[in-house]
View 1: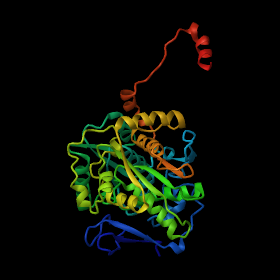
View 2 (view 1 turned 90 degrees about the horizontal axis):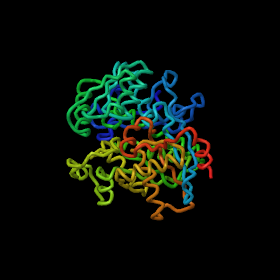
View 3 (view 1 turned 180 degrees about the vertical axis):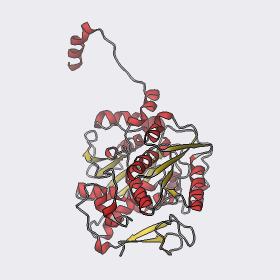
View 4 (view 1 turned 30 degrees about the vertical axis):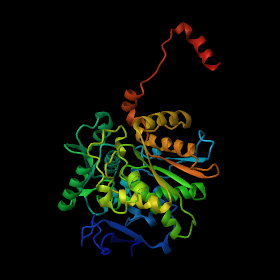
Length: 405
């Protein structure tokens, strides 16, 4: 007997087809129920898969993994105003938290006999998909809007993914690919629930790890928001722990968006209740953002993220590109963690919340450090140019002594 049940979030019908990525009855999005009475972490696994009893996998003995998850939780040295911890997701195999959902998707794809995994991505999701597909033994195809920098997408080529560039904005492209893949029976691993409900459970494991690492529930969790699925999944992870009776309180969730792609911030502040209201917000003329991994006019999992923030008593903030870049450099120099520009929104938001006194000194804050900066060097070289000093060899000793004084 399976430890989980698949059901439709729209019509409530149980889904019996393990290969279905949407409801067989109404084509609505799928969710999962678990047998909480049987949950026990599996000590055989030193990674995120120790939590498989709360993940939709059929046979844990057949898992193939790159050792995703169980990333460090580091105490910040730069913030004395509160108890700040850094969940360092850059330690995942390809350098981002996306390895968690993609590992789940690729293992599900393999279990149902899929041969190819498709994603829409020009960033971390595509790289995770390509790496894990290579590990599992599947082909990978990455679909993206035209114009992505070669330096960003080269790792996809290195992992053997077939790269398809298509005219059009990212949100419309996601919708088009979902329709094609679902109609044609192709396996889509993109990180939105409508694309693939299995991957949407992967980031719940961040919540489980945080609780075990801290020994308590943090007061605040700050998460960068692109599609919204990561924030929503972390919230569901804490709801799982509450249902298991392991915790009695829940954290306030803070979602951070680029300033010109802040639909969820606007929706929360205006009290919008339906996704149609959010879709009516016009971002067609929004300028390009350096925070490309977060730049969704209408985040595909935005309603789930909005509901999570609202239920938690949290908030959304938006950050301009320049503020995120400045925060990225400051954070990297003070914490010893080299982060990508899109993750720079997290320390920028933390700085603002502390300065405004919203976070109290006795409160515990977890900042989610989602992606490493090494794949984004070309962005920083352009926007924050490299600074070096050129000196003659004869002046080296004097210069070194001068630096230490």
